[in-house]
Picture 1 (cartoon, rainbow, N blue to C red):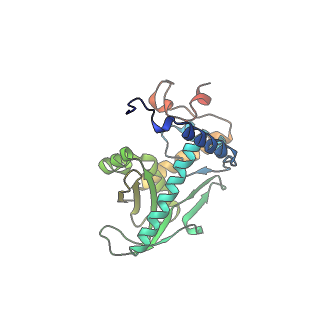
Picture 2 (spheres, rainbow, N blue to C red):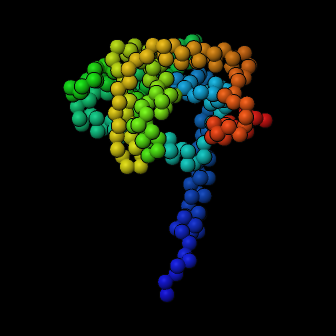
Picture 3 (tube, rainbow, N blue to C red):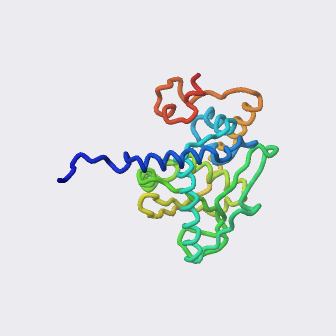
Length: 239
């Protein structure tokens, strides 16, 4: 007889037991210690208090979040290999791809610098290269609206890297992989001096306030705001 009331596979005992074991093992990994510096990748958040918390609070990520981070690194390596096969030479992990300023309190580490490659309209070498892995909804938003509107934090990150790494003469190449279907989107990002200066000024204000023991204003005075609901620091911020 057919069983039309069988449970979903995710509800099985074996699935629950293995996932519980994996989650427990992930929690035993060394916790990501608080950075001694403010990172360029975090300055783009529209809430400066969140930027402070991201910098000053030790991070303990659940297993699923760690897997999402690992997924991003995996897709980056896949993309690097594919681009190398296509003739691109990408410098990665060298002193030229990182910057440090403000007494080593503000730093950034770019994904890479494309030093050479095939002739591509609108792309000149040397140029900054940044890579992200996004879910379908975020990827489609990026494709439709462009990086500045869809992901202003990534836009500011690119601007800071171009400014501090001396890569402002040529547009950056921003690459995004749709992690659901592996479609790849490449877009040129022109240097915007005003945006780079504004992002740098935000970093300075965060550093000064934090060192002075001051909390910067929240983006809203309503804890029910959707941006607060989505923030991992919600409980700490509104206590």
